[in-house]
Length: 245
Image (cartoon, rainbow, N blue to C red; front, top):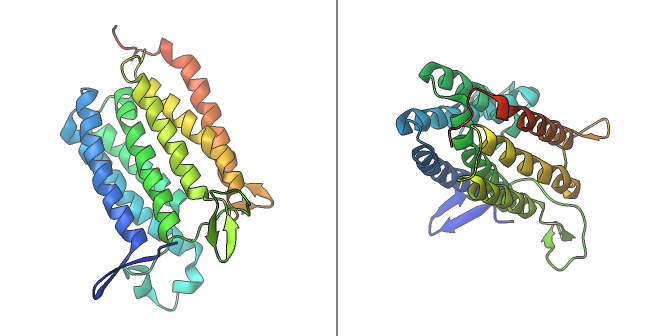
């Protein structure tokens, strides 16, 4: 839609600019969520920062690994900052792994940490969707609905905006439950179940969905996460981390 922002003699890529702004907002939100839930703000901010850095590096190197023939003859292209190309799944895997080990090292309480992490993670994914909408390669399926957008001279579903709306619903769910949670971890599992359940249906409107032998990989991942969250929610009240009312 808007791959570049022209400011006089400067041309700024909207994807990178959106992700930088998103990182700042995510870090700010992390501090507030940690303070609200009574966590060590400095330790939790360190956890989120570590996850962001590991996620960016992991997303880049996963993309390079998947497209190695394109970089084999030009190794400097791997590190060139103007080259776009990141794997969201790779970034999430590396980022979550880094946060897990950081949280273990800092001995952060798992349930409370997950509850504070839920709005941070959803907000980050919303900014990824916004970056994809502004300058990314993603696009929706054909539509004649009035809110469709024109891409490649074809009217399509604004699938990235649907993803942002789904994230907003998940954030509202977290906000509405924040004062009524019954056990540590409840906010995280409910929020992620809502978000993944939404993405399960939203991905049907993405024309360039991640497919493997005809299967929508992202839909399968979202379905598995949703089911796991519901199973864990049914068992969590018996956890030793249950909050005192």
